[in-house]
Image 1 (cartoon, rainbow, N blue to C red):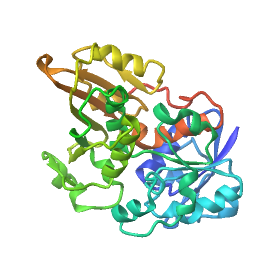
Image 2 (cartoon, rainbow, N blue to C red; image 1 turned 90 degrees about the horizontal axis):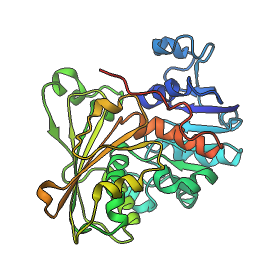
Image 3 (cartoon, one colour; image 1 turned 30 degrees about the vertical axis):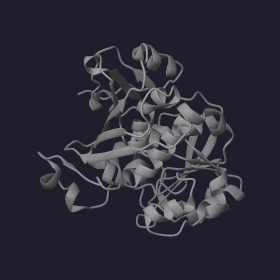
Image 4 (cartoon, helix red, strand yellow; image 1 turned 90 degrees about the vertical axis):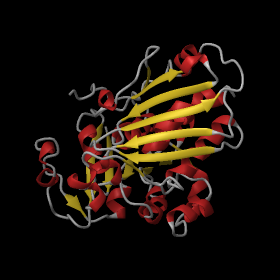
Length: 344
């Protein structure tokens, strides 16, 4: 049994961590922090957790108490983990950061996209990008994990088999992606109101989104060279879910694409390659840590289309964070994550 702490437990990813960890037989949540809700019992804010964490209440962040944990999750806005991660690691805790603080290897690029100086550039060399399908061995040994973003998770998983085998033109890769409104967080925003988001769909960040450099970084590592990526996200009127459609131009005859994807992910417990001709739905992964993928070659031409769906709060955030925790502590990689999707 290990003890974990959660910094920033009042947002969607924080409560999703609690929901998933309530099913984990080897984890005890020892501390959960919130400056605004300090003293409030967790199940008063989230009645769905009644009976699962008796006596657990939100508290002010205390580095000494958190440092006594085996692992600490940061489910916080960017910049918060910068200020605390180094001290907690120094006290012996392992840090799993769900924010964007350590995802980009270049501190100057991070500062460009996030509008402030990087607060802990000395930790970047030690940060492991927490995509198990790429970095499993490094994750097992890591002291600091940067959990990938939701869009980057779906797009990278869709693209990996094609880029690793050098099958597509790396100068012109297109990712057309859709997200549910929980991707915008739990804070009150006009664009997330029911009357604003319902019965409508819109693109945003078409000229540059914060997830663009993260996706490009991952695709470049997979390809072994720079990748020209056009990434356009959209807001859709659903609560949870990411649907990523990836377009690539084949540079030579690829052989059996279905077999390629099945072989690449055959040992990946959180990736499901669907049968030929499939069109995976976001609802088929709701509440799960699964990414479902389908590959198409329309008309047998030179364009390959890959469809990938995930739950943005699970495989796109909290579930993937727990996948990393399991690897770091030698548990079954999918412990606490086996429940099937919620239907309807």
